[in-house]
Image 1 (cartoon, rainbow, N blue to C red):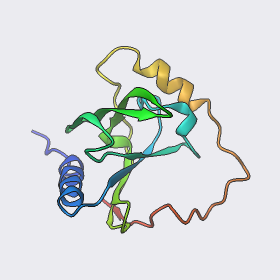
Image 2: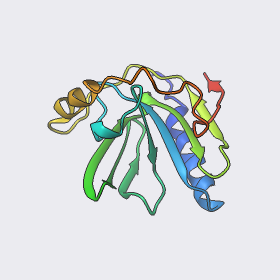
Image 3: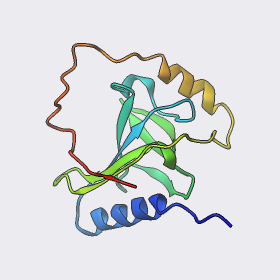
Length: 143
């Protein structure tokens, strides 16, 4: 039997730590064909998502995926993020958190995921965006 990854457990633990300390947990996701997020909010192939209790509805922090509903520009969206695509979780207020290695992800078990994600992939990054975004946390990769 193959040992399960520690990544989903660490994500849940840091989510709980952020919540218990009054911080807002955010995840950084590398968008791939199995990620379902609003395409307009993807930058440089990544998206940062607020996964705090006030920003999400029906949040599921599972072993294979993170799923929830959230509002983007006033529109409720169903979000699906494979755990394998999460590159970091951190507290917005302090930047404290943890970085992860991104692995190939598996398809969403629901319907229509890959078509939405494929549209997101068509959003090519802008060449004039700064490399050193002061809002982006500096985290260490944990293997």
